View 1 (tube, one colour):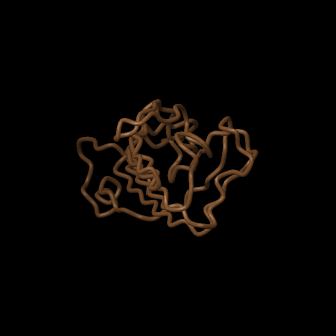
View 2 (cartoon, helix red, strand yellow; view 1 turned 90 degrees about the vertical axis):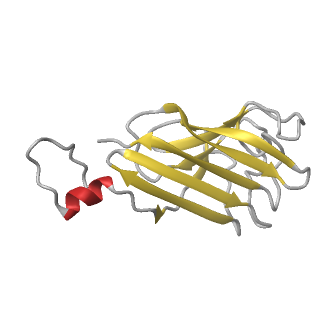
Length: 166
C-alpha cells in the first residue's frame, strides 16, 4: 500500500492508518558478493530477517546463526565483500543504515558492525576493527575472512532504518 503524506482535509481511513503503522513481516535476504565470484550460501544456517514500513521509513533486522553446511564463499581472499538484499528498495545509498555485531564463538570475539546501503537493493556490513574483548580484527566490509574466518556457530546480528524509494 502506497504512502500518501497527510494534508489538511484528508479523511482518516483504515488504509491510510495502515500506511503509517508498521507491521513486522519476514523477508528472505539474498546473500551475494561484490564481484559475484565465490558466492556464499546459507546451507543450514538459521536466518531470521524481519522488517516493517511506516510511511517511507523501513525498519529492518537480520540475524544469522551460521551452520555446519554454510558456504562462506570458497576461495575468497577477503576482496569479495558480502552483500545482503534489502526487503524494500531504498531511496538512495547511505553510509549509515544501521548497526550490528559479528560474533566468533570460538575466540570468543564480538566485533561491532556498521550497516551501509551499498546500492538501493544491497546492504553491506562494515567493521573498523577491534572486538569487544580488545582483540584486533580485520577491517572493512565483511567477507569470508573479515573480521575473522567464519565458521559453524558464528553469528551476524544487524538492525537499522532507511528511507524507502517513493
